[in-house]
Length: 319
Image 1 (cartoon, rainbow, N blue to C red):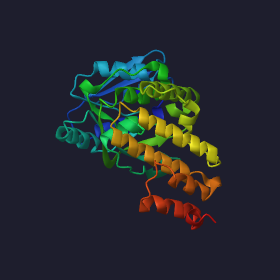
Image 2 (spheres, rainbow, N blue to C red):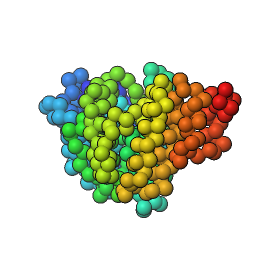
Image 3 (cartoon, rainbow, N blue to C red):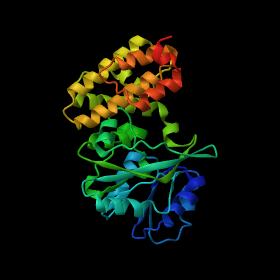
């Protein structure tokens, strides 16, 4: 657990680890130069399983995480950010699952999202391990605070990627590192203005751009970074020309693939194609006709229903 000016959350976050049903662990907490009394609050915990370290100045979350892993002598590594909360059965569920799944290097889970006193469960998309690897080509589907991994699967985080250092590590480690997704929500993820992703959002966007570039170049393709970034935040006012360009780009990635499991990458790309066509609000029914003419289209009842709910009968009649 890296901490930086998280005094208001430490009682809950550290307390959630101490309350785990799985008891054979140590909690390594590293204070990364806090100035809000976080270190003093940390000293109030008397549990012998807690080991604390303190840096006199802020070194960054990647450096801190690497340092903490170096101090650990264990079979598994689990991560929890200082503003998040682990469910009581989190460690037990993940350790037991990895014991049964020797083909996996890490276990992740869904989360409860706590934002402005509103709590809701993250939607569940049943991604297989190979689909998680393929999804990382486009976005990071992994919440850092849900990761429990085998020690030998760890690779050092890189500080130059700032708040996106976890994304870079997972993208670099896959598909060799295989993640398994538990359906249960085992962690509460807190969204607030002081979170690291909020504090350095500008540099994080540039880091994500670099991560995309490295992955696309690994496929041997000339990156189209602006278009690739749009796939994760598709504009509702996109034109038919932009949709057609996105389709060609997705097909190019599919054809160039020599890294990811081919059927899994195709499923991921088909989902993206369906979503961006569905999100092209201002095109109206024309978005469906662009969708269905593509080789990436899958006219399943669920996907047809999505267009019907969004555009009504006009989606199919063209009127």
